[in-house]
Image (cartoon, rainbow over all chains, first blue to last red; front, side, top):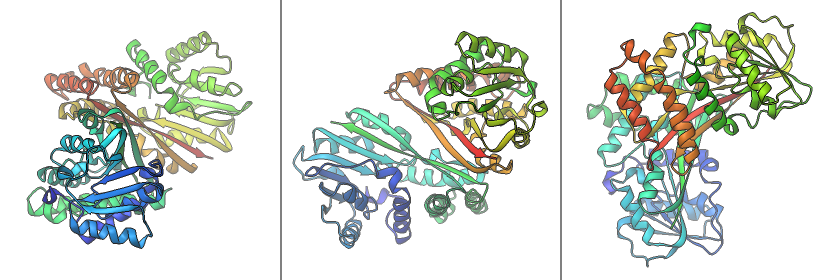
Length: 267
Length: 267
């Protein structure tokens, strides 16, 4: 599973994930608040990009944050300590091989993880075992097929498609956001509710132009440049034009749209 | 301008527009309320699909609803009368050739009109003349490039593209929604604010599955079948498969996404 990841493990990616979390934190996380005393499992915490927000929004909850990567877990732990977070326990663990007692958790939270997994329904079914009856699961994923913009650009769509294809080859699905309803339903969760979180960016929102269009989305696509060109997925000039066109959407008359999907289900 | 329209003039289209308005009315219109005594121009009322909602939400406003088509205006007038609406005056008129005094209106409302116009910025500039200083314009448009779904289907995208292309050939732009910010800005409106209204449909929302995915969006694409095939834009089998695949997104595990854009600006 670990080597199937497209992003998440180098420093530039870490910065991007942090930028993403701090720009989108309100949009994605402000309505997730767990009661004091509840036990929460964060499955796939990575470098802790979401963990600090999660912990601050639910200061009385007892959060266990796991990731398959020891390096990521260590970084997440340091970051949380530096932020004064005391209600999170970090552990290296594989979602498919957990050693908790069944029905140990009141709530499960999983963000930007399913997109990397070859068998997302099985992951959800596995996690469900550790959830108490009546407990909730919250899933957040992006969808790169939801990106559209003005001015439009075929080259920009081609460049985005490189990331989608590389993630697919690594066993993931960069357009998984739209599938959260069927995924959670198939995994047996009840009362599944999906709430799309659209990021709409024009120049009246300079913070999102910089924080999302440029530093989150376009930077992420730029991040696969060498791999995309080396594997022959795209001509270098087309890719570079695509990136230029994505930055063009950040100018005064440009518009950029992207949608994250947040789903909740009950056991 | 009149003959450039792709839809709006036959009975089936009228039913679709009504379906659309009654399904989406809350999403699109609930936050448009004009003060008592204010003069409002609805530019391009068509058969009145939006007018009744507009009038009911602002019962004290004095609304003038115009359309270039005499037939549509007459139908809108009858419909409003049947609904007991008394605060709307209907007139046949061309946006580009109005006979009102400059600065006659406190507010302008224009919905699903710019998508059909070859020169949307000029239309907005023209309308601006009739708006009082400090008055507002409200613009609502869809964007067919914002449609994505699960299961995904290349044929469905091809079928949608037929409507986009036919509308383009008729001088319109079926993907204008994302452009509202630059359009209003270029027309000289101030404090432009765009609010996307995403329609997310899964089977937990049977009313939207039926009212939007099937009877609004897919019916609209189906509506260009003969023209698309006759003009050689697409192979019949591919088009029909595309429509089948759009209906497929309305099944229990399907998902359909579409975004309308609502913009407001000040003079």
